[in-house]
Length: 231
Image (cartoon, rainbow, N blue to C red; front, top):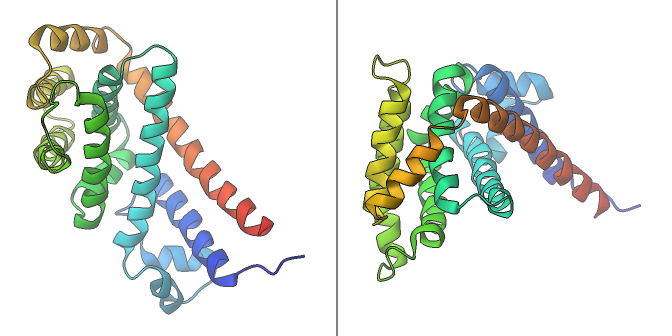
């Protein structure tokens, strides 16, 4: 039987416990001490692998980005256009911020963390290149990234105003119109996509996506353990 790499095992255990605590109790309400207590390790052992709590959050954000890619591909296989998938994604995120305080804390924390925001922007610029490239054929990878710097600010502002007196649909509709305009999506297509989004049970979809994301995090960490023990 192969020997298990103890360093890799410890790192995986930290990621699994921290991710679970972040999604159960909230990122802000979870301290490094809480993670250490769950694992019965010293603070020094934790910081050896993850210098700050922000580095732990970045692991969860990385999983979110991969999940979003897979979800978009799944929706494409089911006949949903990639543009619609992007629109539904933001709608679901903002809806989650309205309905679930833990997820609101997660998204706001991710968008205010320089480390995590860089991951989000790089991921989203790659997706935008694929989804909106037909509307901006002359744009370089750098231009798509620069656009995502602006768009991440729009997304953050829309999520940050959860609970605002302005209705969710009004805020999200305005944000999506701004994003689609940045990427050169024709007005008629914008109207069609937004009409479809808001004719759906987007709150129900948001709850379902969050459930799937939580399951995805558990499955991802479990697969990492299985892979480690097979080496």
